Image 1 (cartoon, rainbow, N blue to C red):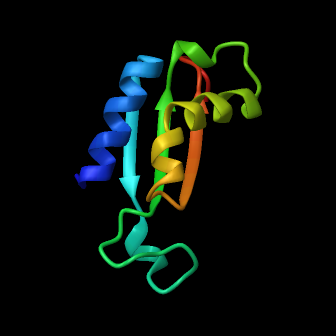
Image 2: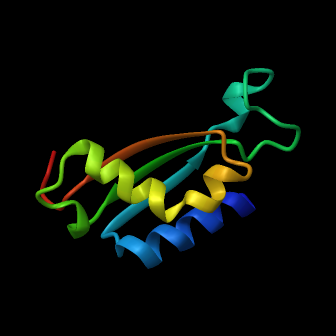
Length: 90
């Protein structure tokens, strides 16, 4: 796991207490594209299941994730794909 992936994991665990969390560094797939930087750690995919998402819209869920990672998104992370679900959702 990359250093940024570990940082993202720690922040999401602290903020949203997920039942399941997977953070995938997809930077290598974006080599040479906008936002890519030497050394990668710029494009991530987050698959998260948390009770914090129950009753919330997709937009509200994404806002919770983005708020938890505001520092990372302002710094090195260029793109973040989010799949956010409540427990029991498909």
